[in-house]
Length: 202
Image (cartoon, rainbow, N blue to C red; front, side):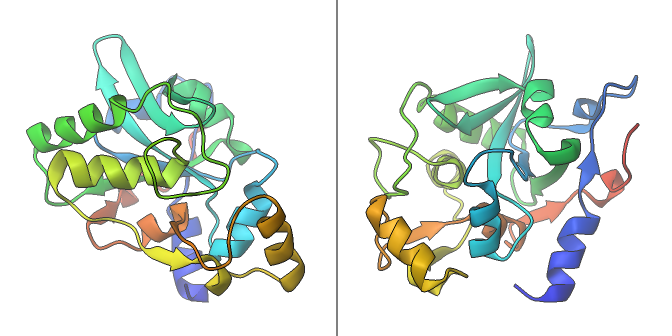
């Protein structure tokens, strides 16, 4: 990911605060939201993926509110406002699938909801017993709408030092395995960044 693209990603971030214009008014089911989370692994994920993002989820607009379906411990349906507050500075990036109608987006959401309650996968394996954040989103689009999104990358090709790769191995993450990072979704041509939401809401 080049410097210009990283700057474009940062420029597309929107800020969310406790104002009178909640940003969820603009969101649709099936939108993808990304943030720099405040988790212990956030900085390493951003460094490794050469992007400002460390966490991603899928929006569900429902009668009882707006939620983010996310792979944490466990896979959860989190109120949007709660999800936003967990990010650094309240910044969020919103992606919208270009080719999917409302029915298809709802199928994507339904596919993600089938995974609710599953444990988080700290080893980033590509199986269905445990899930990590971008894995949940990628599989939801594939299973709900037949849409392939994100990019599989080999761990050893990420921006990781030898020491970091050794530490990853101790944590059960093999240098030869593949995974999908949150940042790879931003560069996917299947999505558009909602550029009209680039200003910070205060």
